[in-house]
Length: 67
Image 1 (cartoon, rainbow, N blue to C red):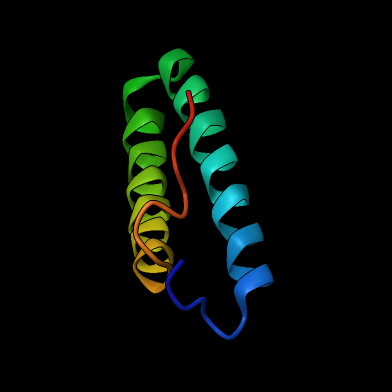
Image 2 (image 1 turned 135 degrees about the vertical axis):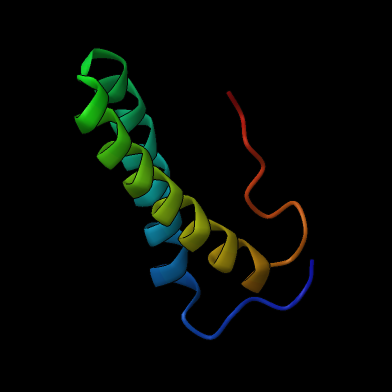
């Protein structure tokens, strides 16, 4: 396995938390009105960009998505 970042536990927890939040927002977005859905979509995009930043700090395949 490749080298883990210095603050490995915090980033790992943050990744899982953001992933759960994105799933929750996607469920809410389905039921929201158009204006609210746009705002929720912006939040989801921001969270996804943070996930990408965290993912790049870790070795490849560290966060295997098991759906």
